[in-house]
Length: 615
Picture 1 (cartoon, rainbow, N blue to C red):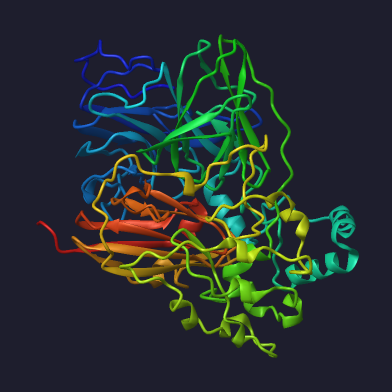
Picture 2 (cartoon, one colour):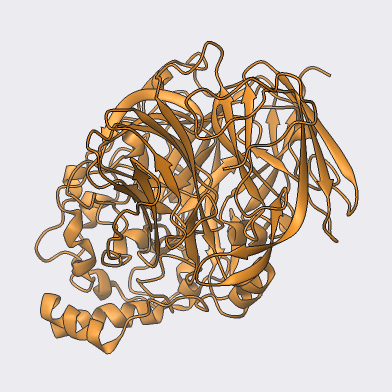
């Protein structure tokens, strides 16, 4: 991958030792934003790129340096660059209408900020749909004293979901029909298969239930039909990283997709996760991991055989994959595995929607759901467990439903508030064993989608969710619960208050929102400098949402206290509640949004204003 060329030739002899690329460590860098042609192997399209290339630019900084970046806009429209995950002054964050006015056509804007951290990050446009159209790159920051865990080779592996259509057209089509890109709709063959698994009556009831809600259990990905790429190269183009047997190889995984989560594995190799979102974690060895949109993970692998290995990144919805290659020499290509069976959403993934909370006219409010549709559910085991500090299942106030045909919108949301743990006391983990399904529970549900969840216990998914991941080889799949900060970044102290953010949406109109309001309808979130805020994310939709707070860290509550992992992006799975805490140690105003491009544009976005602090 090309690295950015500084305009000064000083230090030109400095190199990135044992890395895939070399770059001079200078303090000034030039970036051009250009209209380019993108070749995805299966199709070609016009897009936007940096430095006239579809291969992502890699910026290499050193912790402690002051960087100056001259960004020249060669487009006929405004642009911007956001430095995702970097801690910097708010007026350098690169979000139009929040931190600056944007970069006009033909103009050069100069960013200048100190590098206060180390690790793997990325950058992208925050203007319109330029990011899904190709405007993204990588950032690698060398820590003072060098990497704590050394490797012989070091590669960026930047994933994206390149679509043959431009972002504006995709959004227009989604607004016209939310299912426009759903190529996984159920067929008669699926009905026959389900009837064989759970019986014809149960299979028909399952379809009636989804029909009443005008939804589909196959609606895991809003946008399908994309070609996944690694470092701007498709499976046919075969990105390759070289190694010698026995060498340790560091892979800096970045998901810069517009919409696609990826499950990544390297058959034949274990991956040791050493960093999450740029922050060191205690090493954990896994066979596979899920990387949500906008997240980064650093992993170490050690291929000991003189043979080829495949880097396989498969979309969470199992609609597409990309294969890259680790090889002992050029010209080799790893095998391409078939796509695994597509997951299906279950009643568990509908947990938040079943509450009807804040769905602002969601299709569910028009669905009359008699109680006998859920007669098999043992609510006594599900409704009142101690809230988990990790992810709890969103619950329903069933009293609002008794014997009525009223819309779900009439539910008593106030009952939910009482379940929240006090911000000064972190709650005890939930005992998921009390939720084990009995033989007759959820009789109308499609249990075939849940068969592969047996034996899995990931507290960041709703129990019984159709999205609970499983490693292809039956081994260890990374969970947020496995992440432990190597070194605390902040003193562990009680939060001063809790802010609830309900992730809501209207699929028929393709509106996504927070607390039932789009960005255009909502007041900013006001934080006070010096406070520690606890955020409670309640996902009331059937989609996963990677939530990104600009300018500040999100300390993900996994019950480890001061060793909770520190992230810039936190994925909230359907039907769950997730807690993070943030030390408000910056000033200014910032963006806070779902990092699925079309969800953010549709309204799942907030402005954050910091009051007080140094002038």
